[in-house]
Length: 168
Image 1: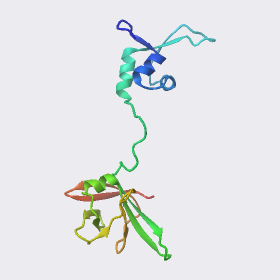
Image 2 (image 1 turned 90 degrees about the vertical axis):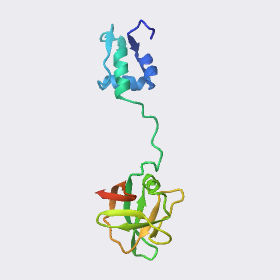
Image 3 (image 1 turned 180 degrees about the vertical axis):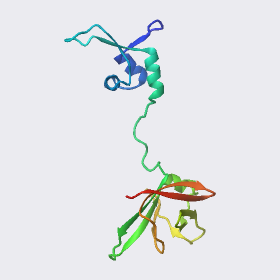
Image 4 (image 1 turned 30 degrees about the horizontal axis):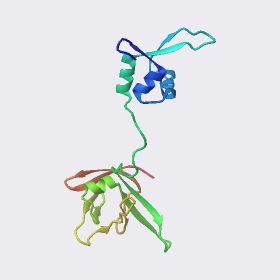
């Protein structure tokens, strides 16, 4: 588009928006982009033009979302599951999102209280030992009964305060 032009072709609009021509066509079909059609008829498509103002509006309302979020960066959830131990008994395991674990100060041990679920860093060898490694921070829970499922958590006064949001 030159300085005097007020319209883009679908190909030019795709370049300006940083998306494919197919994505522009889909946005037109779904009514998310308004166009002006020139020529055409029953047997021909004609020329499809998109105004510069419409391209600017679309760019502002639909920012680019490139790629998937990196795994483990969500970090705002805690998950409590029950699993079968090698001895045949069941045990509970808690998984803490890495973002929450980092915000808590990356502790090696945690103290857990129920009703409401609160997690605080534990000093020394007190509390539950966390396994971190490459995965999500986790530990087995004994002597405590928690509702299974997913909890949404936030940091408040140096501790995680969690609210149950659903079952597995």
